[in-house]
Amino acid sequence: MEDNLDGLDQFIRTREDVARAFVNGQIAPLLNIVTRALPATFFGPDGDSVQGAIPVLSRYERDAGLFESSSTDIEVLHTGASGDYAFWVGFQRAKVRLINSQETVSFNLRVTELFRKEGHEWKLITAMPIPAGRFRC
Image (cartoon, rainbow, N blue to C red):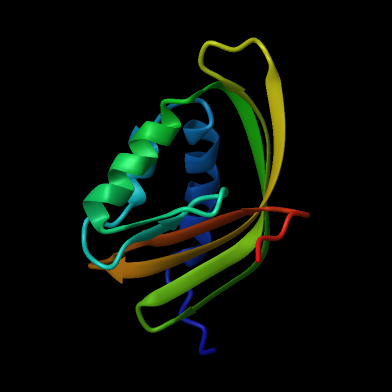
């Protein structure tokens, strides 16, 4: 794959900050990096999927509203770009507290995300978080 990392490294650092905000119920940072154009897809960690820019945005808004007082760490294993598309793969490990719960829940996700250059900015177009250690066939 031809490297075209123009701004991608900084975008990945921003993406890590966005993940931290998300698990604390803050949706605004994610809305700044999510595409408003097609295609857009979200593959949920439970095996469901959502397609289309508006439905994906709605899903992100709903899901962010489930969290409060949480923490997360991102481990980026690989990034790459070619033309107007880029990706990262790695792990997201979090300790989250859901709204109306005193319990903290830990999760470990294998994550693949795809980005598209829109104007001069990278935008999230596809997210695939999969629970690590659990496979669905």
